[in-house]
Length: 335
Image 1 (cartoon, rainbow, N blue to C red):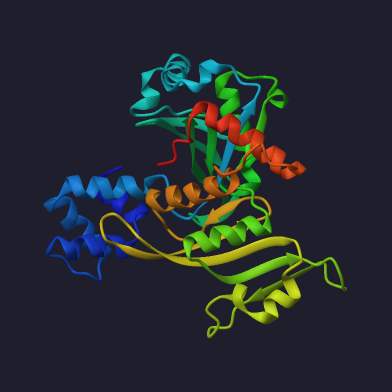
Image 2: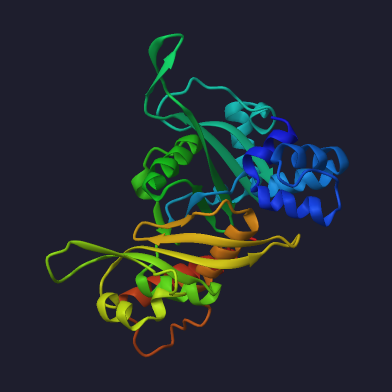
């Protein structure tokens, strides 16, 4: 795929417009095609950096699975993992890619060496869609591509797909590794937050609650959903919301915050915290995802938990065990 196509398909038009205006590149600012063409022609290096920022990100679920027990220490070595992929798929997997026969099961098509991480690209076929072609109705299965990022300190699988596909892609990685007894591996899904942790995340990000869905423990409704009035900046701060939903289990929360990229582009980020994981709803870049994950790691595994405390409840003990496991292997490489 050409750089121009990558920019048009993966990068928000507002981000391209910001770069074109900042670098004073001549192009019609109301034409994405012209802006992408002008950027590639005048500064392809900057265009490549911009494409790389958004290539594996965008509107996507983000689920970070930290391996706790059951995996050989060899897999914590990035070179060991990379050599295993090359041996299994040939060096093409890190180059032009491979072209397996596709079905509904995710299959590896490409791998990317990204400093201290490896990005795996999986492809699979979606449900059949019937379309009219040459005056005949034919069934076509769309091809999808999803990304999985492998961290090595500690070994973690970050899945860039909807939360309900978390186990599906995690198992696909373990299949690549040749691990049969998957149930022997213990994972902690760092991005699966409690309601209180979601509130702490919002505070750290400076995010405002725009919509929420809760399980109702009382009354005739199983769930109840609420959306902020356009004049309400933050549902979380309103007395009405606190009164009705403060003690109700969270199903989904949608929040917004402003983020400034390193190249100066400012974006309003929309993200969702659900009872199954995290979803970045904006067409966002790697800087945004790394920033959110960094805040989640600090919330989930705080450095001030001390095993000398007088009493630790079960949740604190679990958190302490995970934190000690992470400390033993240094911090997760999400930056």
